[in-house]
Image (cartoon, rainbow, N blue to C red; front, side, top):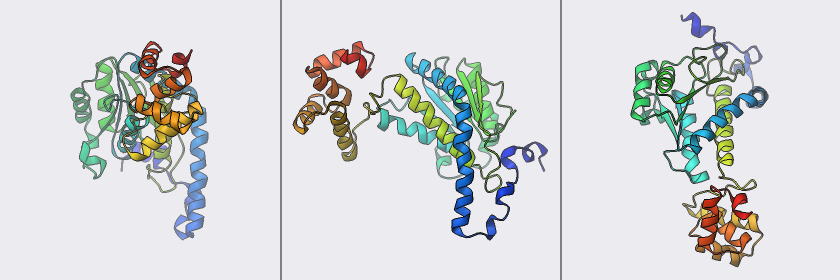
Length: 298
């Protein structure tokens, strides 16, 4: 028995689902769905804190810094998922947003026993990542007390990085380890202790909000179009051309000409069409506007 862990909200029995093993598939899913509704409500109340975290990330990016997620198990995988989706979606350097997981690459697929129990391993992964005062490190743990995550947060703080905690319990050891701790308390899970459910959904939604907001704030979005995507396959080439069309209302012929003239760079193609300039002038305008399409068009 571990009284501290046993008393965590995420480790409590959910009275609403105590008979779930005696229900039909439809009834089980209705219970799960009802509990999932609580996630969005919880997050809405946390928006002011999440916005502060996003502002830290924006500042880091503007200074040439990076964002690191650190977690174990589900939390680590969610961080890696969010990081891995930034390059194709927003054309970022893969080093700009990174995920660290207890146990390393193998742990993305298979559990690495005991890795999450080592503060020293967390600190070592921070050191090997070359964390500096320009970076932001977000520790993610449903319990708020995973040693690997706490060790990483402590070491990142010693190196001068902005440190943020994200957990699903109140008053955890995460609090006080950084500039901000986001406590997304969504109550007991449908299945006791299965924090891949509501807790994991909460973490995924918050990370989506953080990186999406940060990318918008640094000019990766024009209107509501992801104009910095990397057209690295047929689907994304089609999407890139469609984005150019939605942004400009240009003909198919104009879109094709601008896309190829811009060498597949969506922002450049949009400016070429809307400002009626060649690719060189469009690139120059973008550079002067720090990558913001609206600024380049003014």
